[in-house]
Image (cartoon, rainbow, N blue to C red; front, side, top):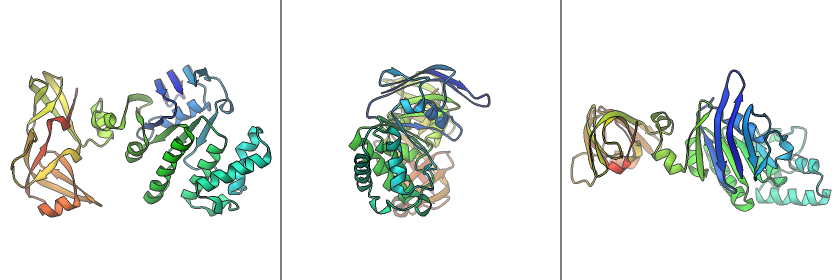
Amino acid sequence: MIEVRDLYKDWKEFSLTNITLEIEKGEYFVILGPTGAGKTLLLETIAGFYIPDRGEVRIEGRAVTSAPPERRRIGFIYQDYSLFPHLTVEQNIVFGLKLKKSSAPDTNRKRVKEIMTWLSISHLAHRYPATLSGGEQQKVAIARAIAIEPSILLLDEPLSALDLRTKDYLREDLKRVKEEFGITMVHVTHDQTEALILADRIAVMMHGRIVQVGTPYEIFNKPLTDEIADFVGVENILRGVVRSNEQGIAEIEVDTGTIFAVSEYRAGEVKVCIRPEDIILSESRGESSARNIMRGRIKELHDMGPLTRVKMDTGLVALITKQSRENLGLQKGDEVYATFKATAVHVVR
């Protein structure tokens, strides 16, 4: 549906470098990265707001690198909603249809009413944007974008200004838009939860480059570099040396002991990545099928709502449920055993 080939764009103070992407028809594709990575600039270049210095953008097989935005059949939803303050909700939604001039006014009004009903905002029809909540404004922005029947919908941090509860509702609305209308959606965010919930595939972007593309599982469990691992929340990144490898199980020496991992590496220095939620804590060594068992003392305990973040003197960080903490009666200074499987360990150079 969207092809970006060797795209390069220089703004002097920042540049997009060698961007190559293929986004499938009907896919929910998320561009994930830290602030300042160039995500919005890439989205706006795909939309046609910028012309690249080199490279190519194709939509549905058609070269659109130099084509203006209105010739790309693209809807765009901004972080700040960008609604017209002097128009009512209904007038905002119908605005794009009037510009298209492809349907009679009565047909346009019927479509707008259908979309407002579908998004449960009919009761807001005669209100002005300034009188709406952030979530209501974003629903209006979604309605306006899909009213023109775009083949592609680009979303720039659409949920970042909203509270957690409203984000949950709108994530469901965005999934419904994709399923109901079959629109190809490209969504820019720095929010990892958002990416996990919404994405069919994710491209991680850093420093103006795409550094990894994959499924949510691949991105969050098999990051290509320690920088990506750190960004996606793999808090346990340990330096080590591969001492041996038997039948695909590497024995890796780290500062606090030995870790076994499923890996192709047979020797040399590596970095070991373990997600904190893959570590199980217990009071005794006990019987465990896990290949890795490490003893340590608790240095820090941080409550995070239903979860507790536990940091140990071994350098390991575990994420456990509040119920697990209460059952174990964990306190700072307690000695615990951390267990995790060799399959939960990801090794990078």
